Length: 66
Image (cartoon, rainbow, N blue to C red):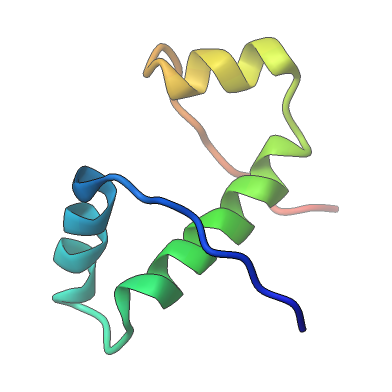
């Protein structure tokens, strides 16, 4: 599996470390999980919905698939 290095903000790393306090994972594993989740959620949103979510203008709710 080919990997690439990315630059992450200090704020994002700090949030990942805070999140780790309840989980036995590394910051890198947490960020990978966030990326997978974001990719999945973004695939179900329009560009406008995604923008509004990132701006904090909307809340997300889930319902089980039928």
